[in-house]
Image 1: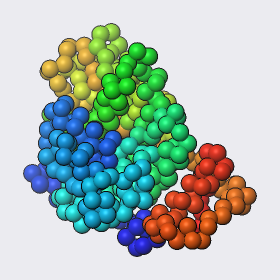
Image 2 (image 1 turned 90 degrees about the vertical axis):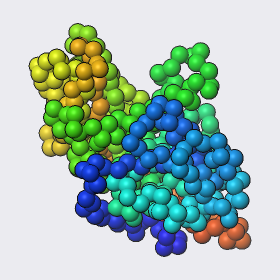
Image 3 (image 1 turned 180 degrees about the horizontal axis):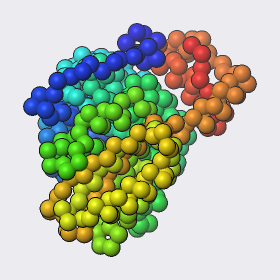
Image 4 (image 1 turned 135 degrees about the vertical axis):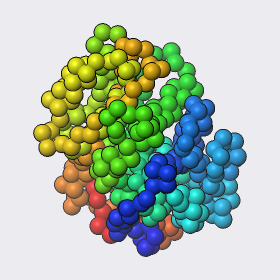
Length: 387
């Protein structure tokens, strides 16, 4: 691989930045069609104090984006025609636009990268954009979706490979499997509305963390950017849940709602190495209710896990209403078993790539081609390939 693209060698230590006006600057960049849809959704929801950016190879899609800032990736390479479900084109396009990406992200303290994995631009470009974010010293959090099972093995294989690249350059990654949507929606919900729900799930992930960072001044027990950085920097796979309830035992029910969130993907909290839990509550919600919830959290967490806790009084909520945001980090990837199985079978794998065809593939993508061939031949096994 070329130096710019060798994400294995990327070890960027975040500089100690002085935050302007003591407020962290947040940038959210949507990559590819899915990511750009999420940016539009954030704009429709009225996100404030957040820098919203759309990045795509497809100029037609980019032109209809509502984002105030836009990057056309790979102007020379794709000429605005998209990546055609080829991640190598997405990656090369982001490499071409690398300095422009760094320029538009400059000054950000935290960068959220939103993308749908399994296609061309999002799968290929997201890791390069994450690398750019790390190089400017930003906390880098990737929030991505994985395709429905019915979208086929090819998309699933590409999504897994794209995720592996993101792991190398992201501080934390939140993965939302689209299949979870089938568990939370009515079977009569139309396709268009279903994808809006996915956009909203991604929006909740970004907005939930942004609220914690941007509203410390309203807090009774403060959580801020430094806390988010502590929990999320160099933590790998992360999970997030948002719960809301009112009435009797609202705090406890909001907690259960957060834990059952599509963003938590049914993973036990006791696997987390760090957790941030933030309450938005009416001023009259009792201390005993919060104490009960924190007791439940501590019972479910590893005894060595780091817990950061905060509350914000919100008089716009009803007197018995509670909103809970949970960010849990340091999980081993759900792909670890997948990878370990692949390593065990690596010696058994025999991959033959025609030399002439192999040379026709861009150098930045050859490892993708070899790995994907193994995914197809071993059916869900993705071993690591020595370069």
